[in-house]
Length: 186
Image (cartoon, rainbow, N blue to C red):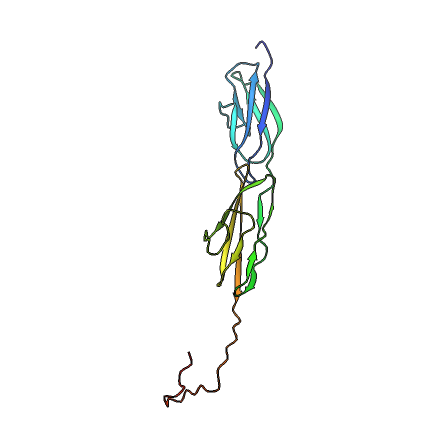
């Protein structure tokens, strides 16, 4: 061939933690086309773009039509830190109490969409904001789903317990003796 086999390698990182959308592409020159590509030096394909990759380090084997081979070692596909949502531990409130929920959100990109479930505005002051007010008279589990600017998602669940400590006083005039006088307490 007029020039030796060579490659200019480009890599695209994973968009969300744990994803499989990494990419390694090769602009191959020299040698004798067509070129084939492999990560294990056993199974080759004709695509200069290897897609659907997980985070990790890859060795790309490039072979030309004459069987000449070059290796592009240690091509690294990275991934961002996970988008984590923490609503904290389950909470107990007293009957009639209103609380504000303060989730702790961490990750590599700015959160842009907040979605609370159940989407019940009789319980939550808003279902698409970061810190809603919660008013409930019964036990409820709430889930927050967060989507960041890259489309990555995180979620957490919290249960709110309601203490109902009502003092009950039974008057002394209550006499359930079936005589028809003061037998019922309502």
